Length: 483
Image (cartoon, rainbow, N blue to C red; front, side, top):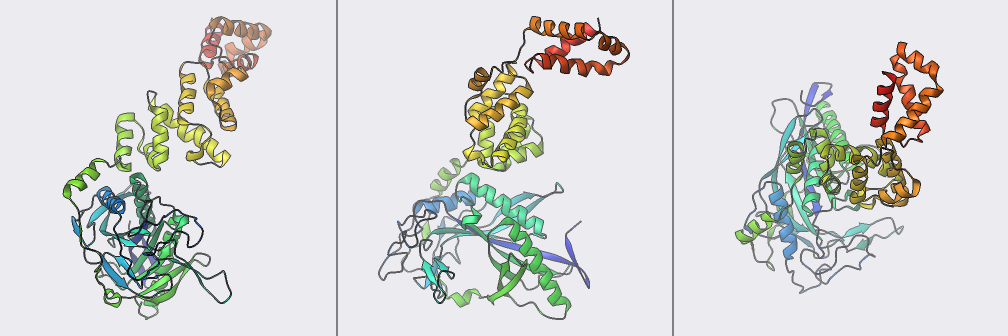
């Protein structure tokens, strides 16, 4: 069942495309050697090139080109050995040169595809139109002075990849799934950190609506949406606004809009410019970008295992369910942590501990996996103590909690707290005999009511301070009660 919004005149279909601006992970800007670190003091990372000083010539950053190629390869896209930089001319206070160096007619990456999985289990392919390199503008700050705007040029000249999708999405969920998957791929590749709250990944959301079977109607673009949840909300809000316009007899005008996250509505920003408004022409300071095909293949050979391939391996080699595999590969750091825990151990047991008690511990401590007090090596060592019967599952949970609080390895905690599990059959038999001798009435009742078995297990474990091996306790008890 396709997603529609019900209007006064019946159902409307949504048509959605995203233009995602991903900040390239690199130590320097696209055309200068200035640094790119987030959070630096305003205007402290600006070269003469970034500031638009006369006579300053741009020099292409090879690593930024490599990152764009890696991203194109990761998106199963066509990498173009010949591309060109153009000047996109417009005036704004945070654009010192009076133009942006971008790729308009000849991008570095052409068509590709992103495969997304939806909540109903269906799979959809979203086409990629192009990926091009361009430099970011500075940042205008309007809330520091009652009558003046401040300009921070730290971001000016930072390398961006603009990744343009085909208008293949038909619901807010599909838009959210696409952006989630794209962010995941970029983070796996290491080409963009995906930190939307820092602005290093943001989306322009193109939305139009139509009746079933119609050609595309006029679209509007919602600019600079900086979270996946807000992208989904912006799609819904803008679609409903357009439906109201069409149903009231009006016409949707092509324009750029902003999404008000507090009110949950879009509002007009400016009429949409067309390409000719920007007077694009080839940048005279930059020759065409020509890439050696052998270098492209070298970069391809160095790509990491991407999430879809890793998930398939977890299912096929480790025997995990598709759901568990998806959870573990969602973040590159989680997958790496899991693989270290699972190395040489039962992969299903490792998955259950990572996704269960370990994740619960992180939630309780309010920490991410990157600053976990329990390392993958130590969690693996804990699983070894369960496997060799030093610890029961229940005792291991107690040890994990102590590991989270102290950061100590499991072996140290076991020794300090005397938590070693009793696997000596003689000691277990002695405890069982004592409980049976002390409770003859319960033993007699057991003959009529076998469900009392659990009571005996509890009493023996209590007597052994929880340190008896549960499987052996059960085994010895059953043998003696049924004798």
